[in-house]
Image (cartoon, rainbow, N blue to C red; front, side, top):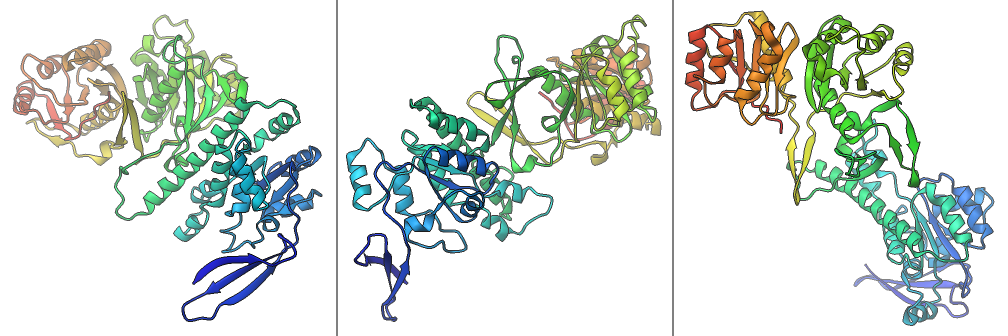
Length: 580
């Protein structure tokens, strides 16, 4: 079918629009659609409002009406304004064309977009509007179909329903108004309504204010489009894990006191990717305690620092992987104490005992509810070093708190950050920045239950030793490379981290473990390149009972022979856990 605009019936430019429909086999048909409208007056102030989320609409409508604006609106927004007693001109009275295709086409029309995009300082633009009896718009207020909310809701929706919730006209209006922000004020956030009304009341223009709203508008559409893109990619049956292009929508959650160091400015952004909506983690944690100060533009500065977020994330990711009641204490993103016990109070004490010097001022995390008894222990427990100094922590993280437990912890320190977090999801995409680009990889979700511990030595480990090896292996996964962990009876005894050579990390771990290392399990995040007169033999001489390592070195045979000589069990996991 060919559709062409023929003419407007004589008598009124805004009376009747005549459409001509023709096909090669069907005679032409004339259809007349009648609208009543008057041409826009020169200098008339007009605002276009089209909202999916109608929060504070009445406030905005009354404010614009009081400032002398004629309000043009669509469908449900127009009805809501009328119900609030605010006069409205409906879009179809401007376009002389009905809403069609189940609402897909409402504002996509020259009478709307011409009035938004025309530059007031270009005489030929204004002449074109005049020739076609098109009025200008001074304010455009739009928000979009709730696509993000629909596709991330608890109830899954069909692909067709997801597609129907992709807004077309809204982003087009927003982009048009934002492009012409010098003449058109674009508003996408209901929180901006009071500020916008105050701006419109003023006599002086402020282009910086207009630019800021334009930036916000383009960012709003960009975030919306990124959600659509991410969702659609996941609907493709043969879609790769890593799409050809990737947009990560970040939203400012708080400004921070500083970055890793006081001379570095910093902020914390929440990742609004669809895949992370129900993924849990520190970014979505609830902060129950710790001063917060309101800052400009609605963001907040909280007591959480840049380093606090890194350490809390490391502690929470580690403790969340243990099935038994567990306490993890972290310092500078490395677990310095880990212990699992049915009695969580005992687990906490053992975790501190592993390295009380490092634990002081660290982050303590639990995978169980913090009740009154545990809160009291956290508040009153004394350092094992002198028996008198109360242990001090920057942050406590747990999945839940009892009311009494929370009350007690709040009394420990005004500076103590108390976080309630949900377990971090698995199968997520891990991103890390390098100069000029980003590295993307799957998250390291493998636990001892997912891998096979192959016995390579003559000596077969006892069940308790195998369990110790599995515990040590889960701990070493969260220690920075080169990483060595010594553990026994569900308790970390010592760890060495971040050394350029594995031998030095091993020596640090033994120094911390002391005599308790005899008969314990040792886990290495990667293979030992050498055995004789190196790390493997040194571990054997120090009385270790079982060693767990990935294997894969060309000198694996030396490691087997060395362990056989000293009667030590050797396990290969065939899984490496590098952490840089």
